[in-house]
Amino acid sequence: MKKLVHPLVALMILALGLVLAPPAQAAYMPTAGATFNDPTSTTRSRQTVLMDQIIAAVNNVPAGSVIRVVAYSFDYQPMADALLAAKKRGAQVRLLIDSHAETDQIRQLRSRFGRGTSDGTYRRTCKFSCMASTDSFIHSKLYLFSRTGGATHVSMNSSANPAETGVSRSWNNTYTTVGDKTLYDANVDNFKDMLPDKTNTNYYHTVESPPYKEYFFPRAGSTKSSDTLYNILNDVSCPSTIKLTTYFWTNLRLYLAEKLADLKKKGCSVEVIYPDGSGDQNTIESKVTAALLNGKVPTYNTRPFNGRYVHNKVILINGTYQGAPNQKIVYATSQNLTMTSLRESNEVMLRIPIASVYDAYLGNFLDIRAHAERVTSTTAAKTTAGLESASETASESARHDNDPDPDE
Image 1 (tube, rainbow, N blue to C red):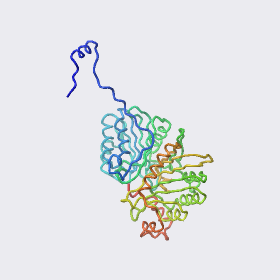
Image 2: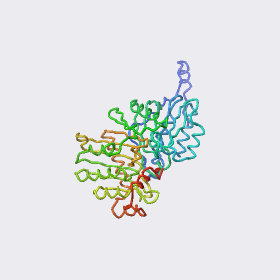
Image 3: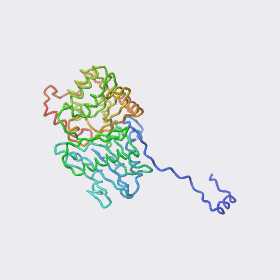
Image 4: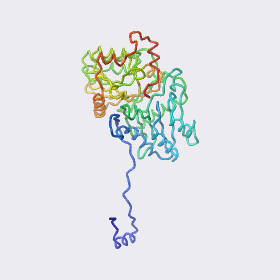
């Protein structure tokens, strides 16, 4: 039964000029730190948690503020709806989406945004990546907000595209920084640098905002000494722990697998999780797997579990790094272990040297491993069935290297 205000109390309130009102709700604030989805969950909200987090930020961007999205794939209708609603209420929405695939959602956004509207909204793409003239991709996943709710300068670095495959078929992560103007400005500058669609494969640079460091690709070079990930592994001293997850790994960066095997031989604890299958789902070239197994690196494959795949691209380091002991560092990147990802595609990587963040990513690694099968010489042979691995040539590997991601 509804509670009524006593008439005498009501008269006193009127006399004093007071107004009864519900308590004010706190303004929305995005949550800083790491978030992970779980594609194995039977609870939809655990699958959609990354997209829900981004959509919540989109829904709280006020009129006049700017949303920027960089993504490889886009077919997630709730995200398209949120972006369309944001434009309708006066937010500026700026999208850079790779051109490898056309979807209903991309057509929707293009028809409403075009190449530009009077309020500064647009949807753009590039022929290849925005900085190369050969097969390559806009492969970063960045969600940037000048203001959302009570927060400004919000950057979400993610492995997740706004796509259903990134929700219910694969493991992904997002790392959010709130109020970090240095990182936000660096990401916005990167966005702006892509817009001209002009070749610049010597774009590589880094930006530091302690404790963070962000890396922007493509990176020019022709040897492993100009491979950022190789140099990271080279800076690890054993005994230390290294855990790596990746989605796509070709022979052109076989030396990364060989480096992990060398670190294992020197006394480091090393583990790898990847997704590999046959046919269109062959994302790990056979020589890479052979190098890991020959080096006795425990390697796990998520494909056998209903075809689900790890899409995180993460390196976890616990130990001595660059001569300093007791380090716990996360490298979260959009970059696959292909040469195209390093030398031509638009990619970003964030270095997070925070122990609690490392522990969160380690927990996610262990959860994914629990849904993966240990790779052996027998199971590796099954996943590469039909491949003439012994006769693979550099040109064949190069063709695979710049293929679109098969699941995206």
